[in-house]
Image (tube, rainbow, N blue to C red; front, side):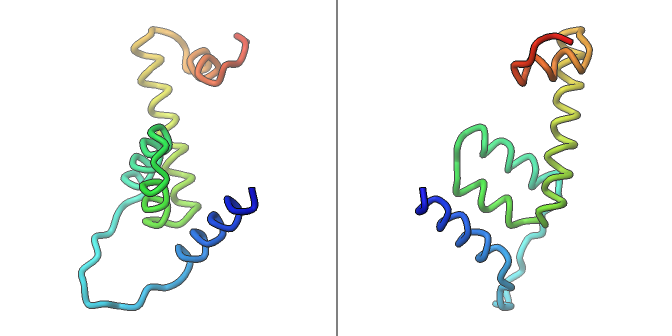
Length: 98
């Protein structure tokens, strides 16, 4: 357990550290791209890709992007199923019907 905490803290510190300018053009990623990669990596349990996507934007921006992605996904699934977004969201989370 402590190994997981140590690794998590190390990843956080590496993400926070400023990288020196190496002269390379680094591609910038927008928050929606970061959210899409982050969520799909979480679904596939790809820790390396999760860490990479989490470093593309600030934690606040990533959180906003993930939230927006969740909203859009629930709306799309609700339309596909012809159900309310609340019904779909509760079902996805394994909650009883309201």
